[in-house]
Length: 337
Ligand SMILES: Cc1cc2nc3c(=O)[nH]c(=O)nc-3n(C[C@H](O)[C@H](O)[C@H](O)COP(=O)(O)OP(=O)(O)OC[C@H]3O[C@@H](n4cnc5c(N)ncnc54)[C@H](O)[C@@H]3O)c2cc1C
Image (cartoon, helix red, strand yellow):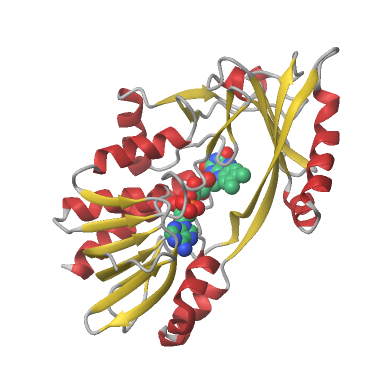
């Protein structure tokens, strides 16, 4: 059976895992990143549909902290990201009433940001996609993870960036080795699902500037035209997200019924003569954390270096994942050296 060894194994190559890897490499550590997805990025997700492109996870990001601002300045300078808008309408607000804070998007779709970051790791870290870790064991001086194919990943330090319930499930019986305080802190973290529809439309869709509508508390919380966003030049692909409580209800329903609900809610936005020519459903089991850990990461007590990070640690958004990955990478660099 194939075997990989590293100083730090990062399970999850979403934004937090990728930025943690940058920090760990800079500290001179050998890093392996694994992700079960076909590509890196996790919830920075972009999908091709009907000759077009749609962001179906994170739609944009905002910047509140100087640390993230600095990274975003670099991404702007490299022309990876752009300011999509300075606010969104709820259907009533007009652009002159938007709050003026930049909302950034990525050229080519949000997933491209993760791909750029992964490219920067090439030759410095081992990145394995399409690799689902299904068990973790403790060894004499660290950890060993195993994927579905039986390949083993031996490491001194382990960073888990998957949504926390998935990370805890991976640890299985090892959760019994976590201190009671750590276990309690991790078990209280909770997420909401999001049920999304992607629609290829021929014709126009009635959406306010800049081609999106945001109503956090409504049954449909978000509608965006990826063509007007600038990432789908050759087709109108519309992303529609159900709000939290509707997503929870739709989660239990058969896919066909959930998609029919989202479609019915979206149809009133079609301009006269416009038709939906293709529709797809996407369900996010762990869309956004609603009960968060107050610190940027959790380093388990009394065990070889074992760290939990991601957007459930600090702030439930892209910036939170970035800051968590950064802080976890720095802390693990200390713990693993
Ligand atoms: C529908 C939706 C809309 C959103 N909208 C916005 C928005 O507009 N603005 C904003 O700021 N944020 C938004 N977010 C949140 C944002 O996407 C996340 O905060 C951020 O991308 C999380 O990054 P992360 O690295 O913490 O986790 P993730 O991106 O989830 O990365 C975790 C990775 O772990 C991998 N993984 C899990 N289990 C295993 C395993 N067993 N083996 C190997 N790999 C594994 C997964 O494949 C995944 O790639 C949205 C999220 C969703 C789902």
